[in-house]
View 1 (cartoon, rainbow, N blue to C red):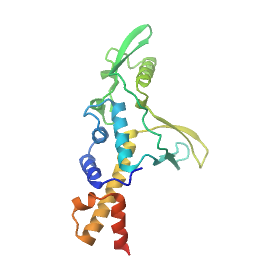
View 2: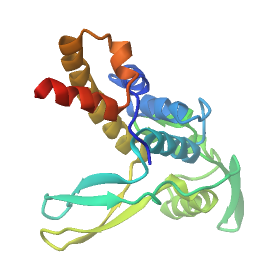
View 3: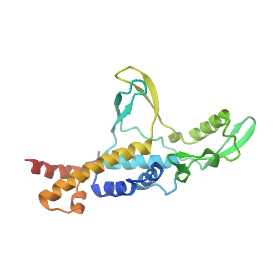
View 4: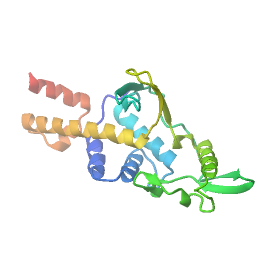
Length: 218
């Protein structure tokens, strides 16, 4: 269990990604977690999740909006949750309508506005054919299950059972953003109260900052 993140890393990643696209943010989080600059998406999500757990602990709280009634559904992600471990190959072969195809696993550089053009993964395939798309997606998920993580939830308000696709990098970014904004407020208070610099304050753990903030409020 972590004693709390130091703030310099959080602010650095947040500063770089404040106005960036989701694809760029995914890359920043993956690199912060030790991934290569143009990692496969599953590896990037695994690295981003590792960064999240290193900074904020293994277990996480989450909120999703019920697709039926619009109420927020709060739930816990246990410390065992995360993108499934895998060592995927860069390409995978599969058959469709007695024809063999090779599809490349998507990489960070394939992302545009949070999506990727599937044609670059398998140019020979007919992506307008729904059965081909399904066969290709099954092959990709069999090679790396982290490419799609589904959360099965029951709404406490209306009882509706539903499945949500879990956006790993989006979740990690929101958690980082919350921490960065709270940290900036802490820095402002402690700088006024003690005259310390941002570097001195962000070098502290969250627990240490809390001690001094409590002293200021008393």
